[in-house]
Length: 96
Image (cartoon, rainbow, N blue to C red):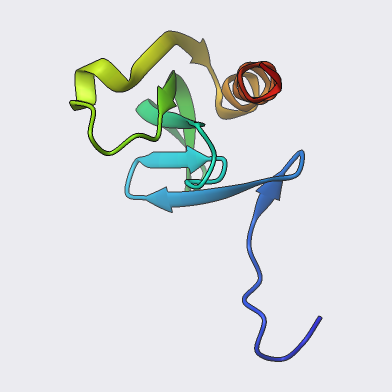
């Protein structure tokens, strides 16, 4: 890795970007992206662990209103379960 390259967190080949309690999964240059919103957390020692996570498959088209971008949505218990569902939805949506 070059010294100027920025290390980026990825899951199953797609980038993850976090802003507060929202995690964006996928490339903004693709037709679809996943938005993961952490709805509820619990304390485990000094860490906040996600309990309930909202998963939304969305179009990346900036001309659409935010409510029209949502293709499908679900809620999952825990971040791993949400990311697992998100990776399946994103791969299938981009394959079509």
